[in-house]
Image (cartoon, rainbow, N blue to C red):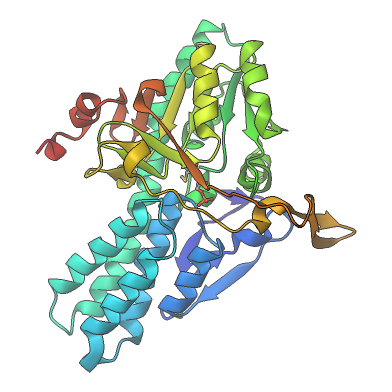
Length: 367
Ligand code: MRU
């Protein structure tokens, strides 16, 4: 997608230097565009933990490149132990997005099937394939999701379609296009009049900092709202459709996504607003059945809630907005039960958020 009219992906191998992976350091957005170099598995683990890169798809892709950098640095006599250390280090960085373990395991399987002389080439190929597949899946999610928006536009006789989204499941959370935003970009390209309500998404403000930035640079009409606004908008007929992303979806259709998603789903159900979840198949957890009980929910430091960061007189500053002595809880994600989800949009199509519906798209997962 584009920033200032120029096309970018969120991660790539540096031109003429295959030992360096480059990322857009998302901690600096929207105020400045900073490209960071990653040269080791430790660099990658830090980038994941400190959220230089974030979002389920991109977390998986970055971990894939982390395994490649580990293979590049591993001493031949110590290769297996180095790769085990790399896998454990990467998987420990963030618990909720299932894409992380998925990408690491895919690398491990591919590397284990190679002779020592082929391992490095294979690790690079797999990392690049994961990245390219991520972008292709998101593009297809856009094609499938477009039908939903087209339907609403027809029913509204061409009036603007209002879509609400939470957090950032845009291209910055993947390699390109995004999951929740892909249908929006496809509808924009199809000439459908639309407008997006962007939840600010405290405490880290991915909606305000990233989704608003993306939409602004893509020329999509949007309005930033405080997190608690969605229910009011839905009660007044100002939302036609909710589309959110996912960090992990169980085989029964329960959805883990950024904290606050569950409340939007409740408000959508109470107001008969369709609530869709867009995800590539890499975000399904085929082993889990009960999202509320089983999906690990990341808890982050209290300073993210206690403090607010922003630009002040040209400088990024962090200020305290709560009494220093008050204890803070900071749950990163919540689980929306499948019964509140109108449907799932994946690269294979749209299905009901039920085990039967999901297996209809993924019959090979039936056993
Ligand atoms: O904590 P983050 O920023 O990595 O959280 C991920 C998210 O932005 C959301 O939960 C998103 O909706 C799903 S990721 C495609």
